[in-house]
Image (cartoon, rainbow, N blue to C red; front, side, top):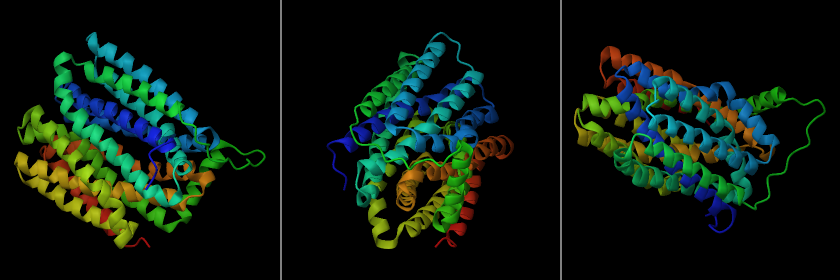
Length: 392
């Protein structure tokens, strides 16, 4: 397991603080969108805009992450996101929050995130030993879930009493705190391989895509993750409508469902690396996808809040198993000097399905009922699980 003192402890703290703020925003944003419009497609479009930059700039973010000092890139991005969120909070406080502004905010935040996430993935192997990567990923993701689900999600209703802008103002402050933790890191940055004469960002991005595609395990896992993200995009974009509309459970029910997902994710943290030791990383992902498919079928057919809460908890456990083993596999199988580009190619392919899923979720919810996005997600997860059977 990774040592807490030194670089990993600060990196963990930065990740947890940032996730706390992000979770405040992610819980408050759909509620704000639902207060501005009752059009499922418009509400889903906010989520879609939060994924679109990965298709436009994801590969570029990975190539830049392999060229620059990852620590400087991460704290600079956090400062920029803090300024952006502070401006948005002020606009909401002054009564200028609109759907158009929400769309712009989601797009800009994710544009910055394409560089931040790729830099963080490339930096972690220089902070912890290679044989501790699975434990480090599990602790990072578990800490983020605790901060997001146990602390942030229940706090949102209390903050909203203070005003619609309060969650976004706190989110801005967390970005600044995260930047301070990252800036204080003293770990040596990964060594950079000499660039070939005339090397361009376009050529380096192409190298990352080719390296991913030549690795059959990473290629198959990326395709499967893209299929699941079509379903996840549909589910996340419409979950607030599913709970508050189809289940008629109100904002409290929505908060309970999100919290249950967080509880499950935390429980899945220690399960993920242990399951991989017993059956392997790819088989662990296969098991996780199979269980999630069953959970989605229950979510879309049982019209009870208790069932939704139970399903979200199970979904969280298996989601953590999938995510920890996926991230670790990318780090283990990628050369250090190409990790940013390979991880960005993986993310771009994998996340590419999410904006499509978000828009499909809005369309099917409006056409056939607020529970149908969960059934759509079950279908895409079924395809993902089937595709994993061919992965070595």
